[in-house]
Image (cartoon, rainbow over all chains, first blue to last red):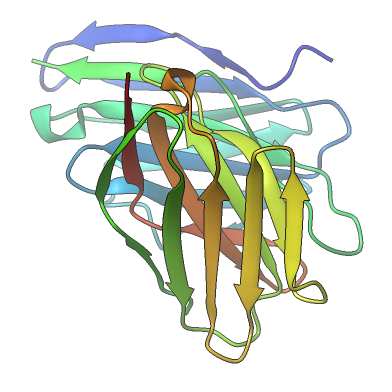
Length: 115
Length: 112
């Protein structure tokens, strides 16, 4: 498997524009996570899905952020409108549920800069 | 919910010395504890993990210990090398790993 695939890898956008980040999890994995990483706040969980259903979105910072998972092989994280403070690396990760103790696998990340 | 603390936030060691990073967690229900290494500009990658039914696990120069009573676990790297320089994250997971709570990270620098 190619691993978790994210796009775009890098994006620079102007404040107020809509940003859409995309993720393809590892085939067969039934959990998908979106994390945001900044120097100040470290790795923050934004939302995670189980079998395409959002389970916990309490980490989504505000209504400008939304995430969807229309099928088992695709998820999006959307920011509308974007603000400079949204600049960060956004990681998608996935995991296959088994009985106990399964780690998650991260994508390469999407480096977002909002100017 | 779970809260994971990690110390130190930065650590510098001489090449060949050992490095120890410590984490504490708050939720006694947590039962899986992975460690990730993140090199500059790259994704976090799993380097070792431990489950609550085990007190220690070793993989070559890396070992992890777990004290369930005290709710802390540690990463030990022996004979450090410059390529060990990275940010290390601990994490704790409950409910058979439905979610992971990460520590804030430790930036390890191995000086030649």
